[in-house]
Image 1 (cartoon, rainbow, N blue to C red):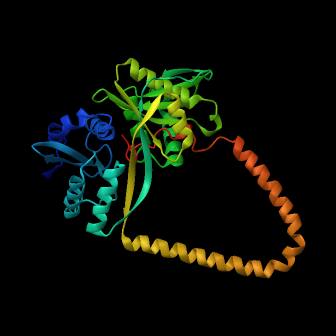
Image 2: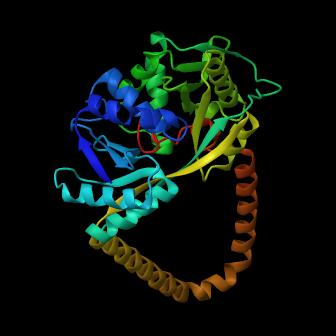
Image 3: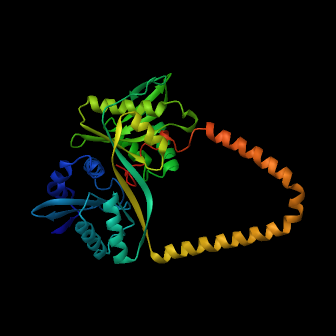
Length: 360
């Protein structure tokens, strides 16, 4: 049992392609990243050459990974032995800086534990995602006003603006927004929801690989949220994929976002598995950050205590007024928060996709 590592994409596809295609839903991000590399070349994600590898056990491929710097290695589901051996293999190679890991929860945690034992690096959760698979599509009823249409190059500037806004809000997209939009436009991979001739939301989808495609980049501008446009766009792009014969239609959500998780389940998506993007930092960096945080907290507490003591006399005479004002303000804020749409709503969280810490 051993890892074979290569810089040759064709060699990787020949060796591990069958393994990845045998379970396309579980290997969705690996497959779509490989598809993008084939279409756009090895520089698709950065200047450094990608590296690939596969784990052979019992005479067959039983695991795979790829790494496209500056993104963390992307791993298939691995046995504990394979995950630990991959950590050893990558730790021996000083040419690449491993900044984290992107994989299913159990594999990510096993790799991170091994990496810490080898290097002393401390891991932290950068993103937590849930992978969903479409069961039976249930479009919004009633549907919001408007209609779907395929995006074209005439929409490019708007889509780049939306892609950049999506990245700022979610932190889920990295890299060149224009390249990512061009990649999706190149295969008809963006559907717009349009109202009176004006685009009000979008939903993207990856290239179809092994009869699988993944919804990605679901976005509605903040001023247009709460009207059902994101759900309608997602349903439209999902229906188009289904009508085109795609057998497995997937999407990732941010585990911490109940709005998007509820929306996609209403549309007919069902949970498949959880993924983690973990980031690595040196133990000294983590310790320094912790110490700085503790010192800041202690200083703040001391300052607050001093301020409280100094102002206690005047506070007594104004406590009643301050309490009344605070209560009124809190009530008003709570009411506003309840009625305002969330900035991290389903409209901008459809793809906390590795493209989850990794664009695909």
